Image (tube, rainbow, N blue to C red; front, side):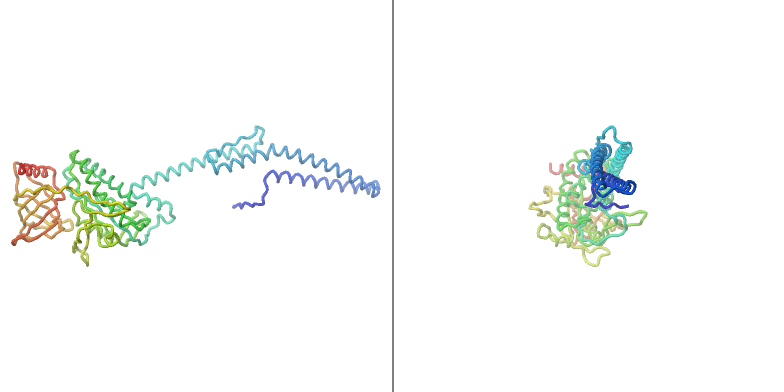
Length: 476
């Protein structure tokens, strides 16, 4: 039942007083008419007698009415009207200060029915407050808990929207950021699992904070890889700029993190980042039994392809992102790569700086390495394609190296941006090198032989220590 308040409605004071007044007046009018008719018929009174008799009766009735109205008004005000008005005022106070909602001071002789109303009202308010607090606590718990698995913005959109749990999505233009650690999987195989999880959590905590600071959402964390989105659920005009600035900040943050963890005995981490801008489907993906809020589309695949061509410390962006931010960024010349399943070559740019909000964000360029150690070591090199090793290795010999890069001469060419696994074909002083993972950054033919420059993406710390020892001895 719905009640619509009428602005012409009177308060309980007016209703009771006027109700009593008209009822008393009606009773007295009936008695006056009855008395006049009776006196005229029974006693045969004349018009003059009836007139004065009526005047006396009217004066008496007026006195009685005034007395009854005044006395009843005081009685009703004290017993009924005043307690009800106090309850009404307390209800209005709830709009200003809910904590004082149960503060109603009633006279001790208030009727039981009104006292019961106040008591029931207080109990009801306590239950409402308790339920509201529990519901607010539950909502905050859901937001806080699921905000760790999804973005806070995504959680709020799902909870606030009536269609938040429905399967489906909408097409939007977003900027996708894909970040991945180099060689972390192989590194974790030789270290204590608990230590590696702690290290990974430190890395993810700092990277996540940067992404959220630039108003991005973390769509997925897959092992040591991060998939972030800029432009969903709410789009912004500068989504590409924020994504690029975020990526540069992430790389700079990793430089500082490496300084901390290497002092603790951990190996330095390297991260590659790929960014692409384009149209995706954003929304709930899955079934009624299991669903997730995410993005799908060719833009995501291209971002992953771009990221796969990066080396540690690089931020690569696709053509679409470059067009959106070309006036604000500093890049190297574009590179192209024909990749499996793509009809056109993949074009990407290495970004070193961006101008945003009047500030320049640039990569922390590491100090230029000294001279490489000239050393010749026989090696075998396996090309990695789609995470699979080639069945036949390529034989070669190292020309020079340090702990981050290796130059080799091979019998067959290795295409630039190809991932490889190296194995040194010798042991020295009871030390045998483990597998080394690297990416070919440049390839040239010199006098009929193939020279490849490799950027190391994963090497065991004990192997790095041996190379550092060799370089120190050569420098001495």
